[in-house]
Length: 161
Image (cartoon, rainbow, N blue to C red; front, side, top):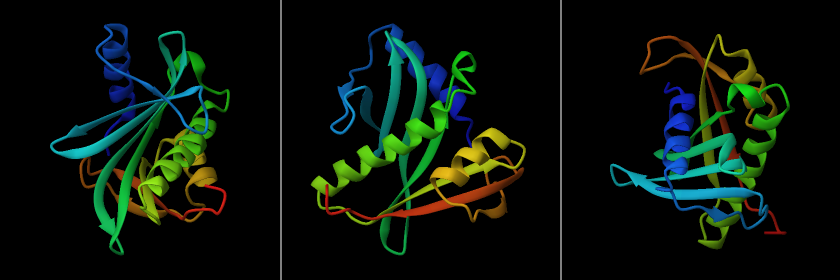
C-alpha cells in the first residue's frame, strides 16, 4: 500500500514547475488528466485544480489482470486544506467515468479498478465503500505488512458512452 499523498505532493511540485502537461477531461472539462508510464506501464493521473493548486488527486496504474481483464490500482488523496468537503468521493467517481469513457473509445471493456486501503484510514475506506465496493476483503498489505482492505469493482461500458 503506497500512500497516494506522497504522489500528490510530487505531482503538485511538477505542476508548479510547469513540467506536467495536462489535458481536459472529455466528460468533465474541470477534471484534468496527465498520462505517462512508470517502468513501461501506463499511469493516468486525474486532478481537480484551483489555479495551479491540486485540490483532489486520483491515480490509476495498470496492474495484474483480473479474470483476463485489465485492472487498474487506484489511489486518491486530497490536500489537508480541502478535506471533509466530499472532494475525494466526487473526484474518484468522475475519474472512473473518464477512464471508462477513454477505455471504451479504445474498445477496452470491461475492466477492473482496485483500491488497497489501510485498515486505520477510515476516511479513505468510506470513499472506497461508496464508490468502489461495499464488500471489501480484509488483507495484509504485501508492501507494508499492515492490515488493509481490498476493494474491487468491475466497470463495464454503458450504452451512453
